[in-house]
Length: 298
View 1 (cartoon, helix red, strand yellow):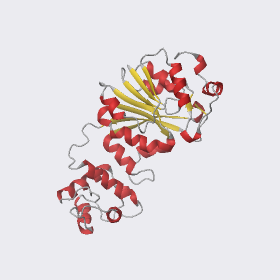
View 2 (cartoon, one colour):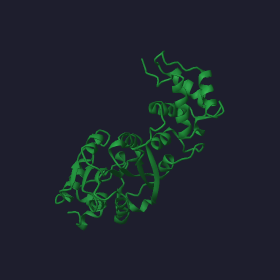
View 3 (cartoon, one colour):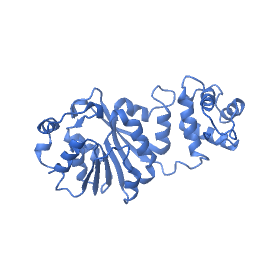
View 4 (cartoon, helix red, strand yellow):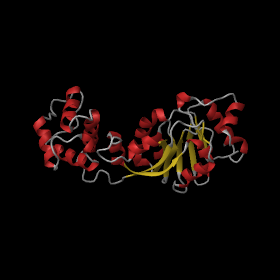
């Protein structure tokens, strides 16, 4: 039962079942009901929600207040059993004992009408691949509210030229608007994590491809530019090309690349870490106009 106080203490709940937090799975269970309510409160009312990592159900219970349905993903068999017991009388909740990296997230969301949302406390050890999967299917959801390590949250909204700025920043910001909502201290979790957490909201940019000749080229350039971030953008991109077996019909010489960088008003010796998203778009458009396409491995 969602309101049963016997479910409010993860420590006692796990102990009664002979379970304990699994560090390998990055398990830190949310225990602050007010904090869970704040997260749930920023989702659109009446949303269909996919929750990643249900744990013992603190966030699931909060989501029920405003959601029309909640599909909870929980890879841990013992925790999945707790969730099924806790929400046995809540027909809006379905528990899937599945790995979020293997679950058909796009399929589940595309079968539902808007508004649709993704929510959850992303395990630190798979934050990047999970986030890439979520953002990669942003065409089929309207809101994503995720909890990540605070340092990771900074990477998502980092400015060009800062140490936190990376190809991940470019990728996420190409697809979505990023908002830092609030932070959470270690005291709201059991066991307390070693670092603070941040809650971030992502909203898809439906017009992201406007004025972009080749979206795939934008993201390829950003990855190549950061592959060796201490090098200039030109050298880093050329090194990435040299390291791959690529289609010989898509050549890109140093002079071509330097001219393209200059054509958008940048110094040919600039580092990729100083390129803003708009700069990557302009460079990709310039290279596309020269006939360059994303290299295909052969």
